[in-house]
Length: 341
View (spheres, helix red, strand yellow):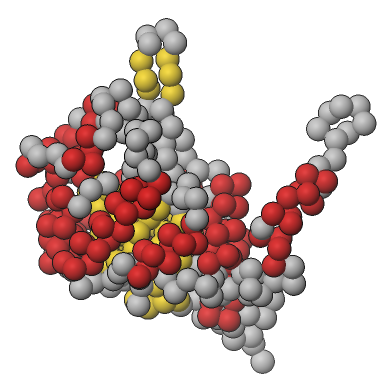
């Protein structure tokens, strides 16, 4: 008797996906053709290219007070963003793209808003819903540089954004956050209580470089590396079974083993971008085939069976996700007697 084909389907934000591999917001979804190609390649769902708060403000010529926490010398100041006409499509064009893309594909389409304040988000969250998006991802990108801004104020800002958007839309809502909260688990719980059905771990804060010759701050985009998966993987494992929000792992997902590890840690989906930008959309069917083969060899029949089997609540030594593992990690390092690594 031939082995049963593993069921790769998963549930994320209340949506049933054919598999957990989800291309996240990137230039790949900036065109209708790109969206169609991702579906044809086998993606479980698609996160649309982000609509940026700066674009919304640029169109309306209004800035919310949160953007005035810091002067133009701060990395997140408006002057550090590229000209909008060269960086992304405008708000109305974005909504038209969402509408056309949704009519062209059968898999879930997730809209994406990138910003920091409630302002224009509320209106455009509703507009993205009306355009046909199945869910919405809020990418809260805020670097608090003002020493007078407390951690509590930053947390409340996130929660305020979520509450306002939740009051405005009916579609599922996910929030992409940074890994720098003093209590990540507490924050994820509060985000869910404020109306988010899912959390995306984590936002990558792009670090500007310095040019000592021109004395300029230089934007420098560096794609993710496979070892970056360890941070979101750890928190997915910690959150599983303890926070009710669905978890999406983002950053460092480059191959089939990364997708498998993300699900085993407790994630509902694994977001992938850098691998597809570097090696092409053809990687999607290759990775999915490898996942099916691995599951068959290890006698897993479904993603539901795998999910969370290596979370903190299910591993033999739960402390490995906490400080107890610190000494083991340090002791695991071995140096060549000659001094070479």
